Image (cartoon, rainbow, N blue to C red; front, side, top):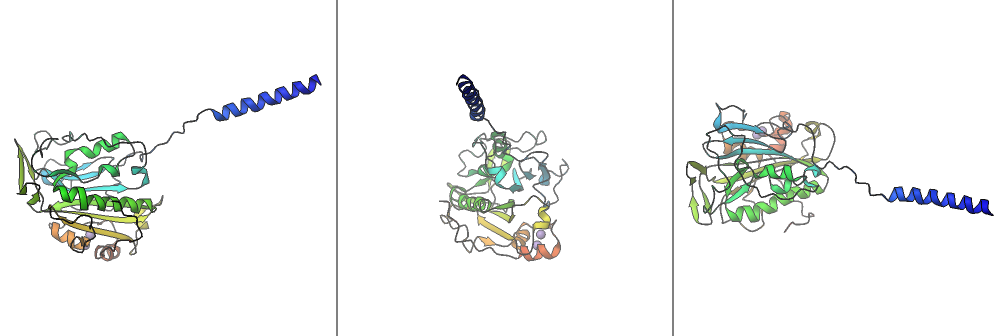
Length: 303
Ligand code: MN
Ligand code: MN
């Protein structure tokens, strides 16, 4: 009998010990953001203006970061374009919106470089190119979207309504199992802000051009671990939107017929040989760049 109690006791201890070990909290190490040197990722499909990190090219100055890539225009005080890769890894995670708008410390000294207050009182929002909500994988990655070199003066209705829903639609494409390459840019001079028409915002020595129109192009491919260029076919989804920088844009209709356009059309409006998707084979580029997107009605709207 004693022997049996002894055995049961030992067995019990083993089970208890084993289950205790199993119950110990085990924090899995989750690396939310993509890792490694990501600086060339964002322009996988090409550098549309052949921007260079050269002080001799202040109006087409390349800034490559892990979070996104910019061509900065020193005269305009805004980017020509911003490019970024978008997938679940960039959105999921424990990052929060940082709201730490600030001058970009990586610009050469003495350059026209807007700071957090430069748009104050202008009637235009500090409109993100690479959105804060596209970089929520960590606080540090989110913070990088608040460099003023990632902003354009954007009419509040454009930024907070039509543009917001359009950005959200792209994140829905990610939720549906896609990864995206996104380019955002602008052209022209003069927009209609909260206080009316304006061409330039002046803040001391700082001058910021108010763009006339703001565009964004996205290509979606099924999420994969391989070569993204090879994953792109003539059947891939391409969406090109160009929206006037104005308060008079309708509430949520980012796919309004007047805003939906083609990549070819945006290339021509940008001028100067601007060439999106230049790293794609010519036949695929030609087909995709003539596409006009039809919004998928099965998607849950974001508003
Ligand atoms: Mn083209
Ligand atoms: Mn092209």
